[in-house]
Length: 115
Image (cartoon, rainbow, N blue to C red):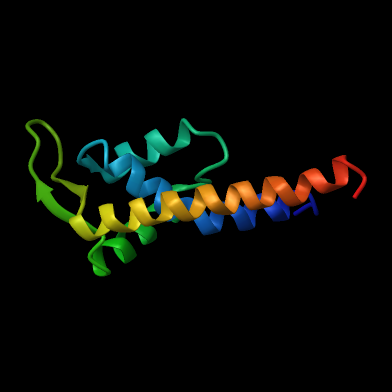
């Protein structure tokens, strides 16, 4: 892994659970559907192996709920939905993220100004 990839990897690791919560806040989804939606945002999720363990942790911590559903003509699918505690965590993260992003932008701008 190149040096330039490391910061993106670390940033992704820190925010991917909130990206999952945000997508689930748009509506209930089964695991593979969620993986595909996240894949549309290049660089957020690297593999199914990232999403499924994360969903299990979010489920265990009460941030998401899950249930098995039989879909006609298909195997049963496990659907995930954001729980009330997950919405609170997502709302808290939005505020933290905005402040953190603004602080980082400010610090990075110092070098543009020669300070």
